[in-house]
Image (cartoon, rainbow, N blue to C red):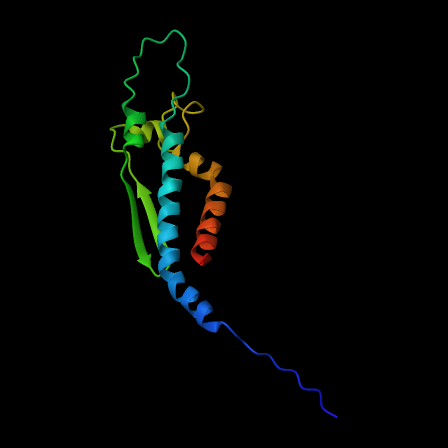
Amino acid sequence: MNLDVGVRVMGVEQAVRLLARVPTALDTELGRAIREILSWFAADLAEYPSEIPGTRYRRTGLLGQRWSAATRDVRQLGPHRMQGRMRNTRPGVVYVQSDDRQADVHRGRWRTAERVVESKLNQVEDRIRRAGERSLEG
């Protein structure tokens, strides 16, 4: 005696249509996610630490303004491969917000770009995951 098992697939046309749009939807969602992530970084980097009591230095606010106005460049590197970048062109920014070149006077007070990115890794992973999930929604 034989036991036959069969499967009938129905509604495949809808699945094919959904899957056909996934590559474009994924790239669109990834682009949105990367722009949002860069705005998180910019907001954190634009924050100033509290002023040092008794100092005569006058803050201009230009460093933070440059982060807020930084161009967020998102480039497609290949299928489902993207890169997001932003740049602060304020002279001296590396001496304030770079791990490698931060001046001693700013160390421990100003957040560096590397530390900001590090502090957001879980949020970045969640946002990229949500982008993938959104690209699958019909």
